Length: 286
Image (cartoon, rainbow, N blue to C red; front, side, top):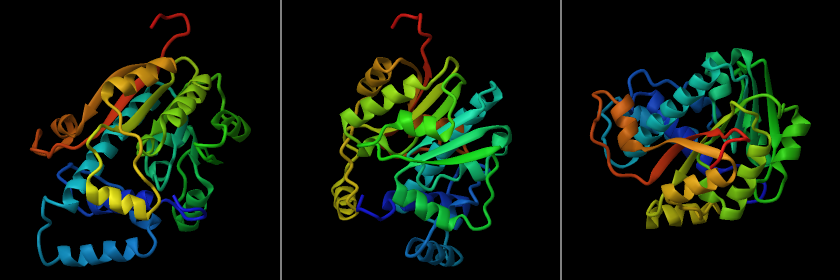
C-alpha cells in the first residue's frame, strides 16, 4: 500500500459487506451495519449509487454480486468460529490486519472480552476517523500499530497489554495473500509465542489462480499486490511449523452449503479459503 494512505482493499471489503447488509446476498439474516459507516468517498458514493440503482432493478448474481456473496459467507463463517471460541471461555481476541473490520462494534458476545486490533498506522488512523457514533462492545479495545513486514508483533501486543498466559482467538482475514512467506512465517511464530493453551487462529488465504489480470492491474494501481498464493498443504505446513494444528480448511462451496439459503446454492469456484487451527499442546507430537 502507498505510504501514508489507508488500504484500498480494506475499503473494497467494507463496501462488499455493506452491500451484503443491504440484501445483495443469499445468506439468511446477514447483518453488518458497521460497514457503511467506515466508508469514505469514493467508496461511500459508490455504495449510495448502487443502493439507488437497486430500487429500480433486482441485483444480478454475476460480477460484483459474486464478491458480495463470498464476503458475506466468509464473514459469517469467521463470526461462527469466533462465537464458538467465546462460548468456550476465551476472553482475548486479536484481529491481525484488522482493516475496517467491524466485529468489535457489532458482536454482542464480545462484551466480556478484550480485543486488540492490529494494523498499519495509516489504515488505523483512517478507521478511527470514521467510527463516529459506533461504540465498541468489548470491555477494552486496543489499537495496536504494526507493519507486518518490519515490526515485532510480539513486542507490540505485549506493550498493549495482551496476556500471553491467557487463551486468545486470533483472526487473520484478508492479509496473508499480500505477504511474503517470510512475513507469514515470522508472524505465525510470534502469534504462537503469545498463544496460551486453548488458543485458536483462523487464517484466510488465497490458493494459486486467485489473481486475474484485472485484479492484478487494480491491486498494482493501489500498490497492494497479491504476492502470496499458497496451497492448502503449504498453509497447513506453515501452521504446523508454528505449533498449530489445522482443524478445518474450507472454501466457498462448503460455506454456501452451511450458510446459504437454500443450502448448497451453486457458487462459482473461487481461490479463497479459511483454515481454523488450534495451538498444539507443548508436549504433543506433530
